[in-house]
Image (cartoon, rainbow, N blue to C red):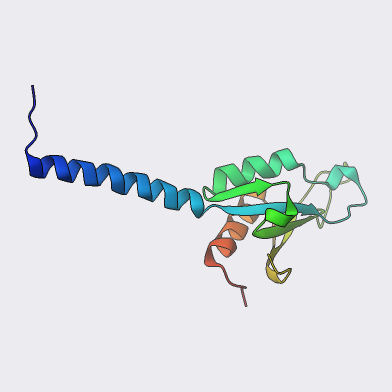
Length: 131
């Protein structure tokens, strides 16, 4: 059987406590994002919540989507595609990010959902408006 000396035991115990505290801090650092859809004239150009949740989960490990606007740290306004094919397929994504005070922090328009979400995540993690 493996024996630990007092100093090894103390170091091991400190490692567990440090890891536990780091996890607690990481959980507290999660940013809450509320999705708000800007009016869209066609349901074909609307971005589904399911697609957004998937994109956020894949690209933003410290962001949680909430359906309670009052608890959100940020509001993301998703607009309709700026160009569509004749079949109504989306050609791009337009997002505007607002902070808790309602001030616009960031706006982006990209061809891929993943790129738009990454841009928004970077803006939230920076915590200040892009100028």
